[in-house]
Image (cartoon, rainbow, N blue to C red; front, side, top):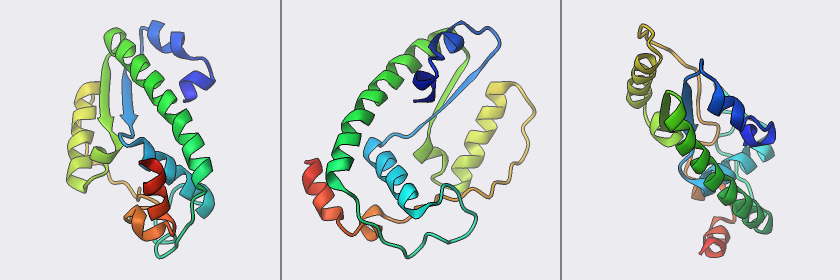
Length: 150
């Protein structure tokens, strides 16, 4: 989205001095709901449990409109990533896989260090998913969302 917004396609395609790490959310619906919930919660990142045990309601019409837009953006992103992977050193990983466990994060970090050609080091992160709970447990109208998405 940022590449499109700032019209940076050619910069990335033509640059001779960059390597690209493409961190991608695999599930468009979960990515969108997560963004909407972060907006409602007013929290983008956290190191504590400040968002646990909260519940939210999602505006379904707004969700469906944004989902259509995000699906189109995702298709553009995939096409651009395919072009970019042919022109630049390119490492792609999914957000869901990267943050699935501390072991997975550590494994990917090691692969990223190798990709960049730098010495591997143990990285400690305080990053926590802001909304790590099951969405059905925190969205009060989750059943309505499932029906609308089918």
